Length: 147
Image (tube, rainbow, N blue to C red; front, side, top):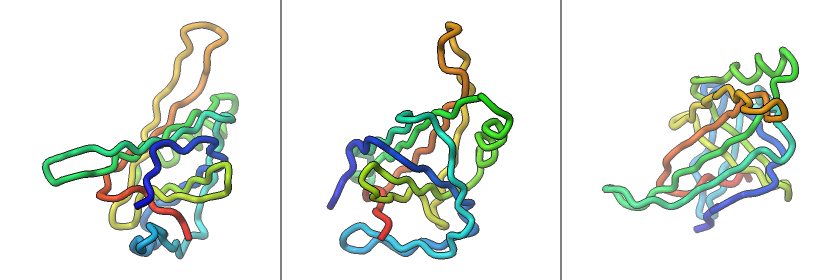
């Protein structure tokens, strides 16, 4: 099975409320098909700030994958502030694209993820002023590829 220890160079992050979409079950290549996906919102984020990790973790039920996506959003205009909190705490599905154009999917209608938003207060005047957004999910298999 294909695992994604660390996906770098994330170029695009899109979010949709889980109730507005349908995701097929992963096939033998760990690929899914997404339908009813007209409502995606592309997230604005600081260049090269997005990261994805998916370490394997042993739990009582066996091996699971702890998928974690994080990105930074500058607080440089009111639209970014609204966008940062638009999906905060809601049940969503996240589609992200790496530097090679490969798309991955976190969550589904049956098992959505939640986006957490943390306000970053710089310790020095030249520090980052904005928001750190993150999403995590535990799965019995790695996050699927979008076919």
